[in-house]
Structure formats: structure tokens, C-alpha cells
Length: 109
Length: 109
Length: 109
Image (cartoon, rainbow over all chains, first blue to last red; front, side):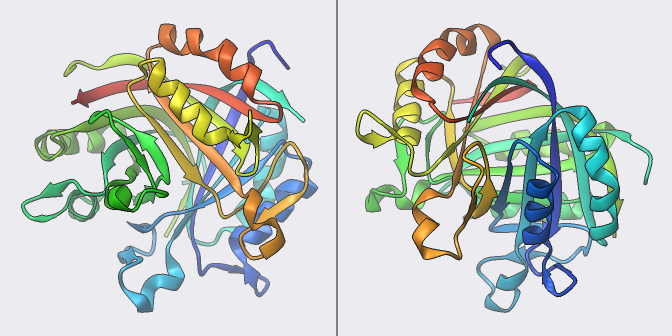
């Protein structure tokens, strides 16, 4: 895949404490993305932020340290991401999902 | 907000040690974003990098460990982000601010 | 650089354990970006993910903790990033490289 290819960057903003069927939601999303054959998925933890639940999270406050913001990033074709969305929308009860254009310059396995 | 909506992703690249009125700048920006009614803000810490100050930061070197790169990400409408910018520009003495298009696929509170 | 300027955001998805000439690849990329005079580079560590190597990485499993996903972000003009790409493609044996549009709203040194 040497030639620039139009792809999409899907970003899912959730909380570290969010669950799906008893398991961490971020973990379930990464596993689902793998099953769906996505090129890759990366979960990143923020150390401070606020979101849909509208209370502030910070790594400084111990009692909230279990609900830091998490961003999951998935890069693939528009087609594959579109197919993935309905499952994702079912799992994410609170959160923000964005889609951006991203040229794929290189993908080497 | 099920239907894709044009939004913007604002990203602010600063240093962990940057201050605003004696407090950590990243913290002040997140608080300001909350006051401005932004949909969400997430502060992420990098473990290595360089920026405007043009010296290398790395978590490996203890003496610099207090000035690792920080990225703050804010997603909202173009209008709300535009209103937020003048305050932000006042606060960020050194750093990089970028704006990207981002479709908002889902925002659930 | 007060006026919005068209820039590019280059993102490199690699593994923490990837090497270039015996050194960590992420470190070598950040050093190279600095030598190339890029405006800035930030390396971020994910805590879970999968990529080209197609096995799951997670901070929970100690034995894999040395190969967590790493994202390096570089913002600059299209021209400077284009010049940087051939070197980068030589260094990244496995991974994903994406390019996005990013308006540079502010760059203050």
C-alpha cells in the first residue's frame, strides 16, 4: 500500500470505567475491532478531561482515577468502518464518536 | 445526534510545565473548556517529543520529566470553538494549536 | 503565524519494541524529525491495541508490556513532511502511517 489511499480515522471517546457485559468497554471495542478485521486499533488514556458525564476526571484525584478518559483510534477504509459502526453504537452508552479523513501512506505487516 | 454532523477537533500542543496564573496550563485550559460548555476535553501526555522550545523532552531523563509534551483535544462545533480561541491564544505563550474537521457520529450524555 | 495556515498532521503507528539500528524506533523518528527541522513531534503510548503484527498488546500482560502501541505525531507544512517521508519509510518495517489536513491556528516559540 505505497500509494496514498483514502482512509478514515475513527475516534471513540469513552471513560476508563465504562463497561460492556461486565468487561471494560475499551477492551471490548479493541477485541471487536480485531474480530472485524480492522487494520489496527489503539487505546490511549488521558490524564485529565471531562466528557458526556460532565464531571471532571483527573489522575490527581485518587477516587476518580478509575474513570480517566480513554480514546480508541481505529484506521481503516470507509467501508469497513461503516460496517463496524452499528455494533459500536450499541456498546457506547455515553461517549463521543468522531470520524476524520486520513490518507494511508503506508501499511506494512 | 445520530446523523453525522460537521464538527471540529481542536488540538493544543503545550508542555506539562507551562503555567497560567500559577497553575498548570493544561488544567486551566480543561477548566476553561468546561466553563465554555464544550462537549468534552481530553488531556494526553506524550512520553517523548520536542516542540516550540526546541529542546528534547523525554520521560527517560529525570530532570526533564516535569516538562513532557501534553496534547489537549477538544471536539465541538466550529462556532463554539471559534468563540473559545481568543481566550486560548491569550493563555498559550508557547505551543502549537491546530484545527481539523471531524464528523460527529455520536454524542451521548 | 496568527492566520490559519494549511498544514499536515503526520501520524506514525508503531510498536514500542520496534528498533532502528539497535535503538528504539520511536526515539530515532523523533530525533530525525528534529534534525529535519520539523515544528514539533510528540510520541504517545497506547495502553492497549493491535496493529500490523496482528497480536494484541496490553499493559495488563507483563510479557507484552514492552511492545505497547506508540503513536508519533508530527505537524508541519505539506512540503516539509513530503521530504521527510522517504527516510521514514525506510525506517518503519511494520506499521501504519497516515496523513491528515490540519489548520495551524497558532505556532509560538
